[in-house]
Length: 62
Image (cartoon, rainbow, N blue to C red):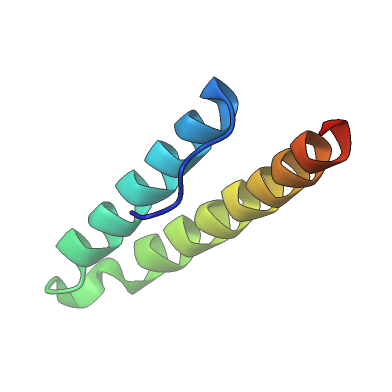
C-alpha cells in the first residue's frame, strides 16, 4: 500500500483493512461463503469510516 500512515492508529486501521481484503480474497473461491464475504465487506466499510475520521482529525491538527 502506498499510503504512509500518520499515526500508529492509522497504521492499525490500514493493517486491519488489508487483512479483511485478504480474507475476502481467500473466501472468493468458496461457493457458500457469500454471506461471510458480505459481513467482511461491512466490517471493511466501518474500518474505512474510522480511518477517514482519523485522517481528518490528524489533518485538522496540522
